[in-house]
Image (tube, rainbow, N blue to C red; front, top):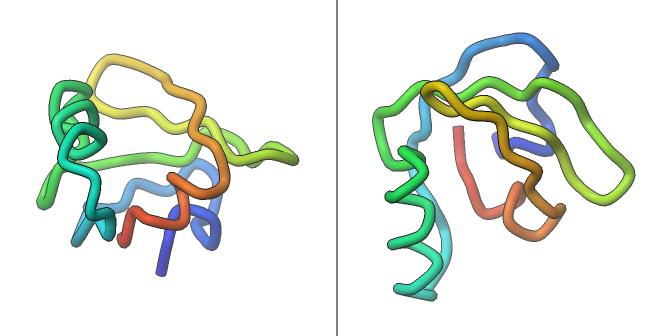
Length: 70
């Protein structure tokens, strides 16, 4: 399941990030989004979703949300 399919307000664990872009992987790691970390979808938007990771909230576009397996 990806973040696009996640229920709002439910905490999940990141299982895998399906991207070949090393720069994007490093950016997500700096946000605290990596395998094994908890992540919560705060709300779904037309173009993606808002997620809570650690102490921050981030807006992710649909393509990035689809790459994060939970």
